[in-house]
Length: 463
Ligand SMILES: Nc1ncnc2c1ncn2[C@@H]1O[C@H](COP(=O)(O)OP(=O)(O)OP(=O)(O)O)[C@@H](O)[C@H]1O
Ligand SMILES: [Mg+2]
Image 1 (tube, protein in one colour):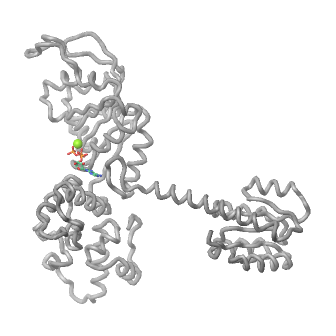
Image 2: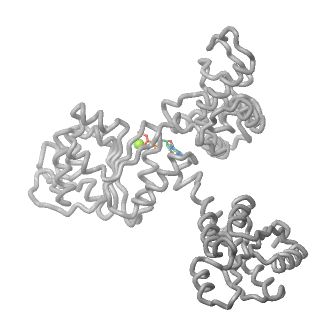
Image 3: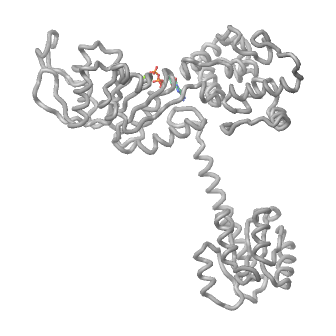
């Protein structure tokens, strides 16, 4: 335990006590503040955030309990040792209940209180460490093969965790390539059905006439070409999960049947009256906003309500630009390993191009771009020439392209710099590391410019 950084606040109105305690504690290497009243104590506490508070229960302006409560409300990991004057065990017990670490009765000597202080410090350290660990765990950069540290991705991880263990129907909505299937996998493999099959059907890929028999199976002779009895996917998914991909493309005529299966938890094969139990957890996905599909008559609203007990919206990559960097790192390393290429990085200018791109194909597009770049790169770094964006979309640091914008008259260089920084931060979704890369400056310089120009730099920045 490094004592030098340990700060203690002593609160007592008897200078005899505070002075001698302070002297002893300073000799032990602690940093010590003293207060004679409750008001002074609270002010000092708020200002200096001590690790430990030693507090008399009897103070001239208030009682020690209110100081204790203030401390515990403001920072629960701060330990408090209560000092009592009259052997009033009652007050001391009350204080312990309110979160005091321990109490000592006056008069006490230093040898008695020092071990208590050390113990309290130790406990505070542990609590702080646990808290720290919890906080670190809760900003995840990766979850079940899903890479992403942005706020919306954190929310998605939390949602998956919250719903996976239930049998709730989940609808995943997001543009193509945003990772809907990865999310569906994470739900299934986090659920109690993880060891049972996970069946996936792309509703858009099946011929209209075959969807029903593919899903529910058919009996021999049910239709031309049905030469034998056949189990459907629902049968194969028994006990596990079923992913209906592109649910908005499911033939409208079939939708009431699926709805009935979900309501009655049983199904019939095509050509048979016999019912079988339907034991699967349904996950659906769509890259078409459900409201549009319902409006266009492609998706029945009664089915929609049934399948979307929980809806997960996956934002497009351009709306979480702060994930571009971490995904880029992940993919270039992945492909460098796969193709045994000696790539060890992505140049600032290449990052600039990546951050400036819109990624209509989302993460899938980024992944493809990097696979190609790893194969094309001549040196050890991926450079702008290795990227397929050649339409001047990115005014990268290495190749400034000013044609895209007019320089307004009567503007100072500083005014322009401010605008450029603001625009760049907008582009990167507030990510300062990404913006610094794009602008070709180091992050500390960007920070000082942000301060200088008083730029609202957003809160989503993780870097
Ligand atoms: N957050 C992510 N982390 C790592 N890889 C991702 C991520 N999101 C998507 N990918 C990768 O991008 C590709 C597309 O992902 P996925 O198939 O899950 O997208 P989708 O939303 O289902 O797309 P579609 O609507 O076209 O079916 C996959 O190779 C997947 O591994
Ligand atoms: Mg998909």
